[in-house]
Length: 138
Image (cartoon, rainbow, N blue to C red; front, side, top):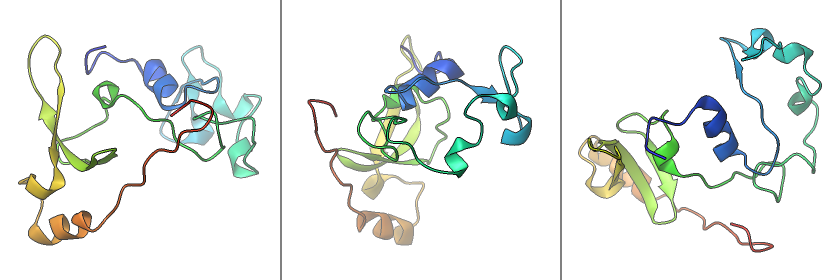
């Protein structure tokens, strides 16, 4: 799928493929509504995350706090200069290359011109932990 064509529902499912998802819109979660008019506050699991994490509610299929790897070309929230942790280290989003696919462009933080030397050095000290593989899933 080309960058910029992902719907909010597709993005939510990409971030959390191991569980059912629903998208709510609003300036605060207390007043958010789904596309069909359902209020988040009235939904079955409203605010459950404030009380406890559930082992059977997981985005990555392994643990309740784990993240699922996503295809960054689908992430329409990226803005130029955003720093992303990848399996190859930290990179900065440098924009989308125009064309039929509008592919996302990333630059290693060590050579990204939009960072000060101090920030570049501090980011260079950070280590990205590899994704562990369990049950054949990433």
